[in-house]
Length: 340
Image (tube, one colour):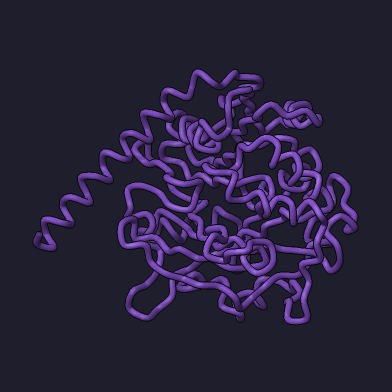
C-alpha cells in the first residue's frame, strides 16, 4: 500500500470516528436535566468553560475563582449525581449554567459525551476551556494577561488551540495529613512536583503528543507504562464538528493535535496544575474503586486505588517546589513560544 493510499484510509477512518463520537454526544443529551439555564447571558465574545463534576464542593470555590480570574465569562457544568452539596453550590453561582444527571459516567465516555453535546449546542465559535475540577490552567504571564489576551494572540497567529501538560502536585508527607478547607488555594498544600521523569512520543494516527510520567507513574503504579496520559488540549476555538476523543487528551479533526513545532522551534503551551492529591484523595480512591466508573477496565487499577487509599507520601529529595511560571518554563514544562 502506497503512503498516499494509507494516508487517505486513515483520514477516512478518522472522519467516521468523529461522526460516531458526535452522534454519541447528540444521543446523550437525553441524560441531562437542565437545572439552572443561564445561557442567555452568553455573548458572541464570551470565553466559555466546561466541566463535568461529582462531589467537588471542597475544590469548586477556588476552581471557580481561578477560571473567572483567567477570563472565563460563563461556565456550563454537568453534575453527575453529587451528594456533598456540589449542586447547591453551583446553583448559587450567577455565571454558571447547570445540568444534572444520574446516568453512568463510564457509559458517557467519562462525561465527554455530555460536555461535547453542550459544546455543540453552545460553544460554536467561542473559545472553550474544558477542565476537570482538579485542574488549574496556568500559562506564561497568566497572572497579568488573561485568556482574552492569549486567545487574541492565538487568533492573530491562526492557531485555534492551546495545549497544556498536566502536572501532578503533591504535599510533603502523607496525603491525608495535608489540611485543606473549601476556598483554600490547593497549591498552598500541594506545592511539590516531579520535573524530570517524563517520556514523550508522537502518536502516528492522531498526531498528538503522548506524555507519561510524574508521581503516579513513579510511585503508584507497578507498571509505569500504564501511567496516565498527561498531554491535553483544554482550550479550543470550538466548531460544531469538533470532538474530543479521550477526555481532552486528543481531539478530532486531528490537525488540532499538531500544537508542536517540527522544525526545532517552540510553540506556546501551558500547564494544568493537577490537585488530585488533596487530603481527600485516600477516601476518594476507596469510593472510586467501589464505583468502578473511572477506567474502561478498572481491574487493572485495583492496586493503584489501594496504594492511594493508604495515604502514601509521594515526596522525595529530588522533588521540585512550585515557585511560579517562570521556574516552570525554565524547567521546560511550559513555553512562551512566540507569546510575548
